[in-house]
Length: 114
Image (cartoon, rainbow, N blue to C red; front, side):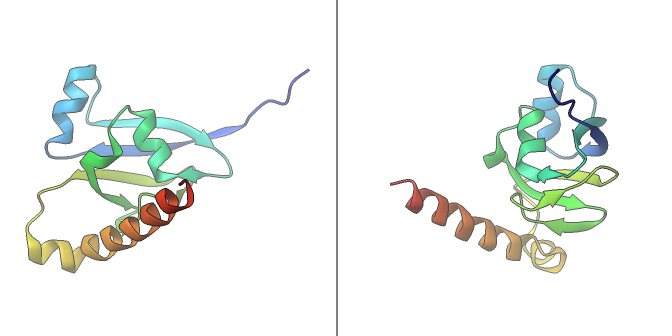
């Protein structure tokens, strides 16, 4: 018998223009999805909803901005926001900082895959 994967749930809220992509799939703006008990990168949850990661500028986990490459765990509350948040808010909320970190990590990934 194969090993059974145990999962927990994350709650996800979708904002802004990302809602158009949810509408196209007939999905609600607030939903729950199963993830492994040990967690997974936030980008995997984005892909689970078939949202293009390049359309998601910010991910909030339990009210704080995280990087799309950071882990999320069962019980977390997530919010996905598209690009277009005004400048001062991007800095104040930490979106600008996480976008720089995301670019650094993705640059390392693409450089390592050459």
